[in-house]
Each structure stands twice: as C-alpha cells, then as structure tokens.
Length: 479
Image (cartoon, rainbow, N blue to C red; front, side, top):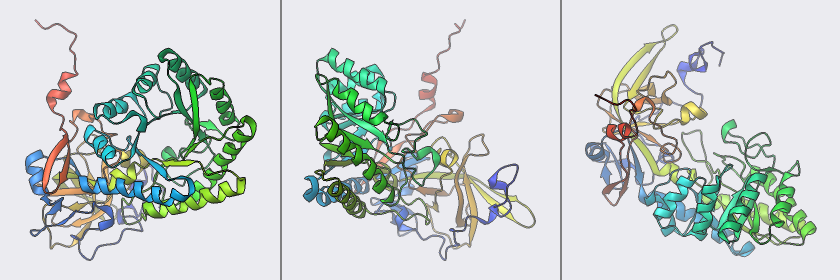
C-alpha cells in the first residue's frame, strides 16, 4: 500500500480492503470461530445468544451494550484448567491456571472464575478490591504490576495473596518492608525479561529488553533480584520465576525460547544458592480469532506444546519440572462477548476515481473499544437484528466521537441496504474493551449484560449522565 500524507487509511488501494477479506457468498452467514458458542441466527434472522434474541436485549438494556455468554465464558475457563492440569499431571502434578483479570473483571466474573476452580491474577489495588468484594480466596490470587504502591502491597498481604510478582529492586524492598510491618511472610515470584520478542504489536510484546516490565535476564538483573529476595529470609519467600512474552500469540514457538532461558536461570539459582524453586509461571497472551485471518490454537494443543517444551528443557538441564502456571485472559473472555450497537447514519463517501466507501456510524465508538485506534486491531461485524437479501458492500464501521480515528471495524462486508435503526454486532470484544473503556466526549460507558439459559441480567450497569456529573465538583459558589 502506497504512503499517503493523511495516513494509510487514505492510501491508494485502501478502499479495496485487506487481502485476507473476501466478499461473502452469504452476507448473513456467521463465521462461527469469531463468536460465543451459543450465538446463532434465530427463526426471524436476528442473532440469538444463550437462547435470547438480541432485539430483546437492545429493548431492555439499550445500546451500545457488551453481551457476554456466561456458559461460553465458563466453558473456556474450564477447558484451560482441565487441559493444562491433565497434560502436566505426569510432569509436575498438574498446572495452575490464573485468569488474567485485566482482560475483564467484575465481581460476577470473579465468582465465575472461583467456581470453575481457576486462580485470579490482578495487577492493581482496584482489581484486588473486586476480588475481595467477590470473596475470592486470597491464596489463589496472584498480584502483578510494575509499580505497586505501598498501600496496594499492604492490602494484598493483609488479604493473604498467594503470590506477589515483583518487578523492580525498589519493589523487593517495599514488599519486604511491608511484610515486616505486618509480621507476615510474603510469597514472591521474580518477573524475568527473557529477551524474546513476540510477533505481535509493539505495545503488547512484553519480553523484549526495551520495555518497562521485569528484570533483564541478559543483563544479570534477574539473578541479582533472586539474591536480594534471599537476603530477606524472615519476610520474603521465593516461590519461583515468572515470564510473559506478549499478547495475541497463536503458537508455542516463542515459549520454547523463553522456557529455555528462564529454566537456565532456574538451574543457576539451584547451583549458586542450593535451592530448588518450586514454581514457574509462563504467563499468558494466548490469541483469539478476531477475523478470518486469525487461527488460534486450542487450550489442549497449547498445553501439549508447552509440556513438550518444558519436559525437554528440564531433561536437558537435569532438573525436576517445577509446578507450571499460566495466565490466560483474552482467550477466555474475548470470544465470549460481543458488542451490540444501533446504526445511526450511513454515508457513502466518494474516493479517488469511481471508488467509494460506505461509512456506517453506530452509537458507540472508541470509548467502548479503543483497540483499533491503540493497536490497529482488526474486528469483524454483522447485521444483528435481521437478515438481508441485498448484495454485500465493503463498509467501515465508525463511532460517534469527534475523532477521524474513531473506527471500530476498518473493513467488513455488510448488506448494502443497511440503514439507520439496524442493530450491528461486533464479536470478540470481551477482552480489554470494557477494561480500556473511557468517558471520552462525556459518553457514559455501556453496561455488561450476561445471558444464560434464556435469562439476561446486568452484571455491570450502564453509566448515566448523572454518574458523570457526580464526579464534577464546581468550586465556584453559586448565588
């Protein structure tokens, strides 16, 4: 695609869409890999989820709304737990799965995760507060974050979190000091930067050297972190090492290099200090299908591939396999949810020559899904309230914000008769969309509604204008 001074979206050929997107034979057909398991078209052509027509959801809860299939969410969580536990059982007695709460967390989701037997990974005092409110067991909580405050550390230790993943030398001393004040022993893991650059967007690749997370392996900082932790035997207990190579990863090749390097440190610690660390966390970042160009691996395939890597590396080093843990978030939450919008305007924009583009504007936008603007992320969509016999047209779905970059779906084929009032659904929005949402342009954030067995309920209510104004303190005294 040729360069253009106004950006790639205006370059020659951009209006034809990406090479992987093909005109559908049936514009109403759903690509099942992109949707929660229960989503289908009902008798009148409208989408249904969990046995409920989306038109009812729009009527009762309004749009935009995040719609989550509870059974789908639970089944994906259960699949990760069962697959990894079974595959790693003969190697190390099983594996622990911690749901990465940053993907999407509320008290209902924390309860689901608890009931399905997973642990919970949090990375802020706010996420910890949600876990506490849900009554999530402290010993099954991992506490992440590259700059945890003293108050956050103390809150976690008071609640008895099962692991604190330390990320800097300053934090090692903070945790030790907090543990001493509270007269507890803090269980800690060392986050290791292994120098593996995952093939993903720059902002979600997290194991290469030039970024904020963890202790560098190559520079010796990780080994020094271990030494400093062992220097506080009364208040710090070293559980093991943690590595995370990035997000939206589709195979285990990157984990192979990461495992080799982090197990090298594991062996060095055993030789230098005479201890065998009991745990190794390989992080998460497992990808999902947002469009037809994505082909993610199943939890069973991921577990099998990672087990082969760990067994081979440990055998080569002559060390027992430590207890393995992983942290899927997106792979559980992402496909379980779609965002339901209502179309407000449809506009045909003339481009160079005879070309044109159809702009479909909906009642949400970058405030409820910032990922296309932030990561250049691709999404799909479909008309949700009916079926159409019209021919497909290449469209761009945009929001209502005062930004030209307010794009939800860059390219998708929609029926050419799409019009104001139609419902539109965007799949794969369960991870990071609500978590990264904002009140830009003072747009209240959408609700999250959960559907199960034909019953729908709000698990995060819609914000209101009153909510927005309640935070606005007018210092000037009115006469």
